[in-house]
Length: 389
Image (cartoon, rainbow, N blue to C red; front, side):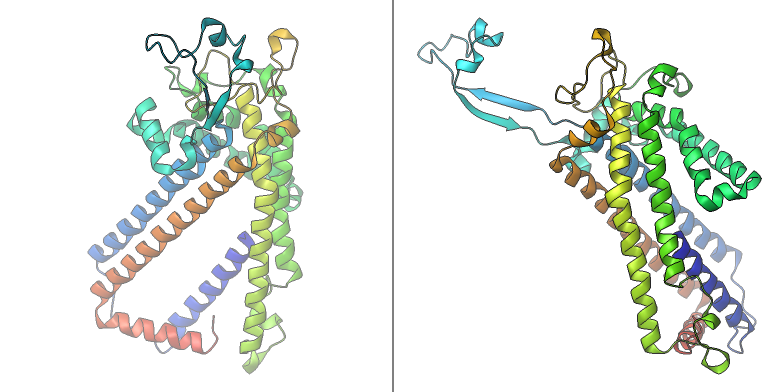
């Protein structure tokens, strides 16, 4: 997808240069300082809102959805109903000795907290305060700052690492401790400890290396596959190398349709690889992190630490961590669909915000530019008709 974006940006820059070199150039007009400040403030607000949506719902809520285990309520047939003072269950039944002999009328599975965004936010605010939607933000900021610099250093000093995707792979592994700490901060109840004292122990970190390597490999694969598709479909080539030169450098309608179909195919490939590979790898890694949460730390949403009996506590000789395969298997289909629903909602929320603010920027340009805006639009439309994009 980044390859497609870069391709479109190059086309836009080329068109921008051609526009300013054309006879249709708007002369004698400059935006005022107030207009520029207003537009910049609008764009900055949009960026902040997009980030807030991405972090709160795409990161925090999605992580909680990956580990939540909805609680179940079992209703059994009550005895001794003639006596209103008698308990619904006897002491033995309460201890579970004779519960198997009772008639189970209903097993009710409570609706997951992460099933709806508003329910999740209300739950977080009730348990962790008004800023809980940004929990872990400090750790997240440092994590991405260090990850960016590590990736840049690896790519700069050894260019082959960037070309093969190994820079991304190594960066994910190096930042494993930060990722684990951030995950455990997000899923746990509020703690008085500062973020820099929430890092996992080395013994716990060693148990996450296989899952982290799987996630890093999936990340590299999902990074490389769309780029490979762009190269195969020749979408990374400039216009003059698509079989047209000179006066015939623009694409005809049929060739435009072919290019659009190829670009759509690349998008489908990128989406499929993310859904089928990256999301399962991320879920697996997150659940492995959650299984290593300290016993004295409570989670902020219901969470089955035993993973249905798959985890053997370290105190009795087990590893204390869920296996990679079991981490994914215990994440049932209802939870998988719920998580995909989270990502779909985030996509549409960000799309709606982007479209709304883009419309607002256009309205601001129309207001500040007046009739010159109509000239700008007409010129852009003419360039598009000529196939200059």
